[in-house]
Amino acid sequence: MTFPRDFLWGAATSAYQIEGATHEDGRGPSVWDAFAAEPGRTYLGQSGEVAADHYHRAEQDVALMAELGLNAYRFSIAWPRIVPEGSGRPNQAGLDFYSRLVDHLLAAGITPVATLYHWDLPLALYQQGGWRNRATALALADYAEVIAARLGDRVRWWVTQNEPWCSAYLGYGAGEHAPGIVGDMQAAVDVAHHLLLSHGLAIPRIRAHAPEARIGAALNLFPIFAGDQRPETLRAVQRADRFHNRWFLDPLCRGEYPAGLFDDLGVAPPPIQDGDMAIISTPDDFLGVNYYNRWVVRAARPAAAASARRGDERVPDGIDYIADLPQSDITAMGWEVYPHGLDMMLEELNRAYHVPALLITENGAAFHDEWNGVGRVADQRRVRYLRDHLGAVERAIGHGVPVVGYFAWSLLDNYEWAMGYGKRFGLIYVDFETQRRIIKDSGRWYAGFIAGQRAM
Image (cartoon, rainbow, N blue to C red; front, side, top):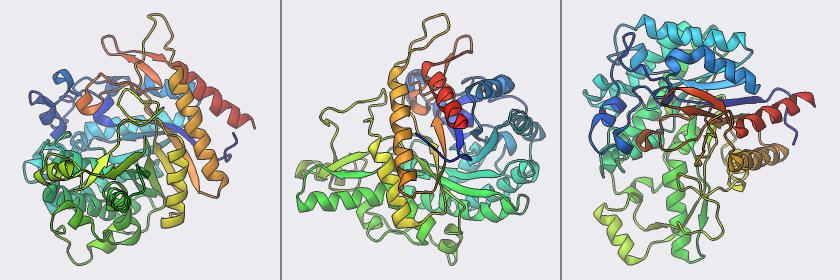
């Protein structure tokens, strides 16, 4: 495989999943701290209180990135570490931590890619209405300016929002993520609008301090396949595409919500004010793509459709997701490994939305990794996963798609949200009892691949 010479080769993490130190140096509580503290919300009641202890081991972790040969690192900034109450006076210790991290990265020749929001909303803002409240979008813009004023002289790449679909739907529809509300699709739609609005509001605030910044949002996107060719199944495919992809793509790239979306969800449109859609569709420099799997759907049988109308199913009415795919490779998360879906998605984005650049901001898989107790973690399935998905990226580039970088998820084994520490995505194994780091075979393979690209 051959990639452009200036391609970004990276790995990604998020603050709550790796940092720990949730009570240190002035950090305020987040909605995820509160969610994880509720009995039954997370695997074994686990939280991100310690996680991978990156807050105390950042310099060590940057050295590991350099050992892997990465030339880019995508990390998120913990809003409650910067503005503990969500608004008001910034916390100098939090700003200092990320400033040191950026300096360590630059000293190692690694490009920092900063994500402003990866789900850890300050709890104080949630208690005032959270993302259902338009004021939270304004607060994120203020927070973005605080960060850009401190880091904008050194950070060129910025991601405003990570997977707002998850914040909105998994937080308020499915209840699997903080704040854990089940079945309030009207709230999910309203939350989604304010998340999108915050993206557009943040862009000029960043540019005021970083005129050369490249700014975008990262969406989790899924190619949708039909499980059969019945007309009702083809309509279900359209509903699933609106729900999983176009709900956020169309406002960002076209300045409008997809027709039929709110009818599909059985809700009223969100509280759109004059000028909102123009703000949301402020031109981006790139679109971040988080890709993990495809969905295969068919029209739901009458019993399933009735269940969906009762709110028991977490999808728009009439969609049935096929789980028992023949001959499929399944990860520890229960997701199908389907590399071809990545190049299909990239080519469709290029055709339909004409984004100036695409950045693979997340791509990875959880497997049942085992450390041999000495110095090796043999994870050949992840090696194959990376090789095959990088092949998909190369095919897309060969077809004219402007992909400018790839970030493996994740740099480290981490706190996998409601799944706790039971799912390992890392290129680097973390023994959470001792915090020892061991580069997995997949990390070694990725390092060799990157070195090979540089040698061409």
